Amino acid sequence: MTQIREGLATNLSAIPNIQASAYMPIAPTPPTVYVFPARIQYEQAMHGGLVEYTFTVQAFVALGLDQGAQMRLDQMLTISGVSSVKASLESDKTLGGLVSDVWVSEMSTYRLVELPGVDGKVLQADWVVLVNSS
Image (cartoon, rainbow, N blue to C red; front, top):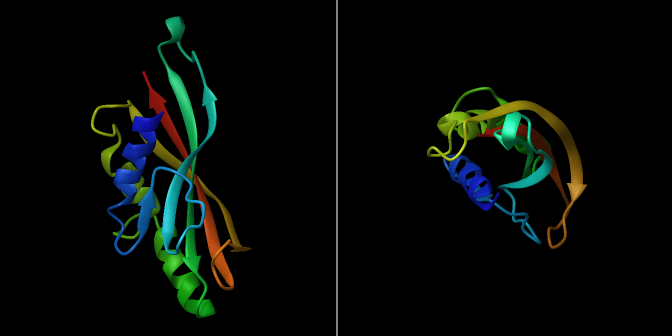
């Protein structure tokens, strides 16, 4: 689990001007993106040969100017490009040979939230990431 989280965070670190972490920070400083497990399905093949992990990748962008923050997050939502969370996560689909596949299936949340230690609200987006390990 630790190596998978760290591999996903390494892929995310290619996004320019963002703090990427394999773990939930207690007080994230936007812009930040991090990884946490959402579900594990054990023994999906005979003899326990396949484990399917579902991770949530969560990003926060400082609101500042309404439109600017949304534009920044929109860049992260795109399918491709240097700021794309999907493209970054899928840039090494085996995480250096650690897993058999990484696939970003959807962006599931887009909302305003308050974070501890951050003045004002921030924009949050979540992605669902499926990882197969055999």
